[in-house]
Length: 246
Image 1: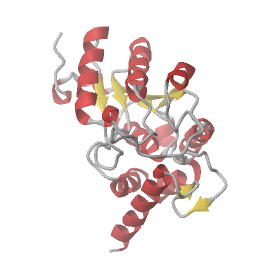
Image 2 (image 1 turned 90 degrees about the vertical axis):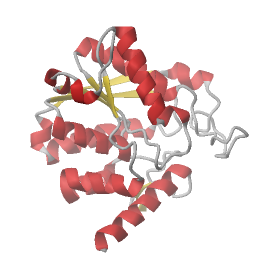
Image 3 (image 1 turned 45 degrees about the horizontal axis):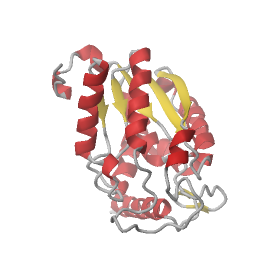
């Protein structure tokens, strides 16, 4: 079967979305955008033995706050799904699933890379979306401010969209709102979508730190301040503030 571009999909295909929602800054921004666009939005997350398992609680806090602060979005927010993907943690040797120091590998990728993670996430999300009659899969992957993860690249997302659509005989659209913007622009997108209340929600309730630190509070949110995820979030927030003040 052919998989047409997003612009040629029938209007009905744009009525419902499933957001891959980890509880971090990126996926929260994607969720906000989906809620501003689609009539029905559901969320999905995965417990894969990640060291920063605190994100699974953070995402529930974010969902609660969105419903409270944005009642017009709450009416569109549907069921939340959490899938057990422990097998991914069992087969991967990554600093996100093992107690090891962060470093660059000989391949040129950081050891935070979990091989196959986004591929599995999207496959399972599509299987759920098939059953729930959700046509759009929304994910916060990005090529601009990323660590070179091959499963975050635009080419990978296009290939997955085609494979999932062919393999399930259903037209899926994989939407990547952050693909070509950096972290400071992600902060700006959140502000454009939900104003300062959404920015404040992201700072206080989302989780990014690879070490799961919810003790140390910074201007950009909670985290150790030293892992790659914290450093990226901090730099992006600083640039966002400078741009807004200019």
